[in-house]
Length: 478
Image (cartoon, one colour):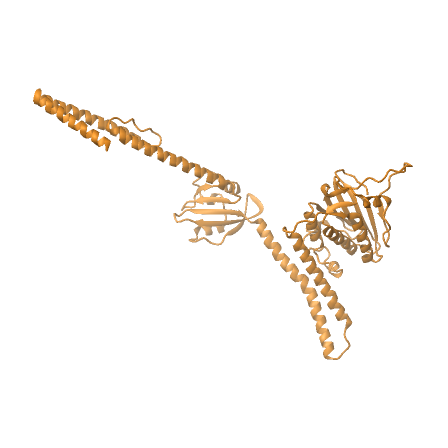
């Protein structure tokens, strides 16, 4: 409103001056005055219109002209609008940069395509996966896959396409396209290798469980039918059929127990019980049990050359050693030797089960700890194995932050080693010094096929130890 009043006041003043000149001087002077004012006004308007036109050609790169007179308010308002727009543009650019930075951190590749399938923008993952560089290049220059062409040409989003990329050999990727109302497309590349492997493992697991259960169920069914036929004919009861039913039922029970054990070990919500375990007593107990299973067919030896106590879940550790011992007995011919060795090497506790059995070829070593994988299918089933023993041992060691290692030579035997980290080893108190200065007690070794003898003096000293501390050395003796 103020600029309008100023213009009106200037116009009135110009007219009054012209009237005064016409009255007191001459009409010619009044006309000259009005002409001069009109020319000055026209030149001023033309000058500011030219400056404004020059600014509107590149408003983001040029400054507004300085206003004078009635133009000052108008140019000031334009300048305020220009500043607000510049601030909004800067804020929007900052938001876009933050969004791009966040999207670049995604593991999935994202590519924005125009209606002609040319690359508009791609995040870092997509550039690395597909080798995309620059923009406005056809996506087919970077991804050559017939299923992708069909996916892009289809009017609606189809099922995702799985393929391998030349830049990532051995990995499986999923390509998915989302369409926008403006005609652009969002191509998503996702690494699904782990999911594909899990699906394959799940399928194999179901197939293996079905196969493992089929044999005992079939045997139970046939035995039951034989018993029914005998009862219908009033014939004597076939005791072998009853024995078959009992034996195969036990096989299924062992399979179910092992499956439940695996499920429990894989449940991350169940924490690990960090108890103080007397590993020497545990191994001596398992030695007696192994000799009973062997029934004198093997020579089984126990060597204790490590700390007597460890921090572990006692039941799980016992299960792991038991599985390794039963495997050693199962695959070692009569007259062979099995050695249980507990010692500290390279700053970790190593519990080894060595045998002089049939051994394992290198072809089987990679898959040895897989579920239901057997080196000798017939021998394992004939001796009651479920094919889950080593898988259970591997999970137990993973829960203890340890490792399962194995080495084998066909025809010479195998060695399976449970490796416990040094943080789980508890040092034994030093035995009382010998006044006569006798030599230190040797490691405990128990051999033979009968009941294990009493522990050596060094082992008994470990039993009476009251203090417990983590063992950090690379050597220890019980």
